[in-house]
Length: 206
Image 1 (tube, rainbow, N blue to C red):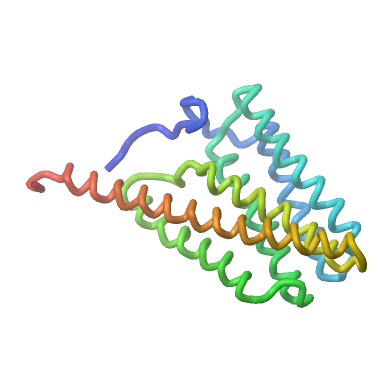
Image 2: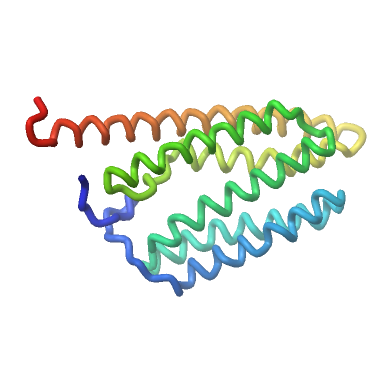
């Protein structure tokens, strides 16, 4: 069983257990905006929803910058940040499917990927590990999906703007889902390696 201290994979620094940090407060703000965003997008107030999504994107960037500059990377922050991103993706894609702007199979692909990752957590916990560091592919996939959703909303606009938004929105959405699943396969591979390594380390195991 691993007893290694959690580390910031991007800088190799130990991750603290602090809760009340500036980056965490920014992440809490982003989480609080999720239900606001959900109400706006389900009630088709798309302009206001886009404003909230932009604010959420800015806070997503800001909390990472603050954490790195002031060395306030925390274990809670590493959980809050991807959780907020997933909530925005989930709420948005459900709303878009409800409004018949995207097909339900796209929702299934996104949700199934997170179900796969959720199934990995008990295995990691049993082997003494917390959540795995976020892969660059996962970050890129999340960014592509978050970029695609405003464009798919703009696809409702008639004329050239709507046509271009539909084209680039779908390109970003499919690229994002592809990267999303590629990152999932990388996570699965990491977990398999952890299990194999721990089994080889067990006494009496060849």
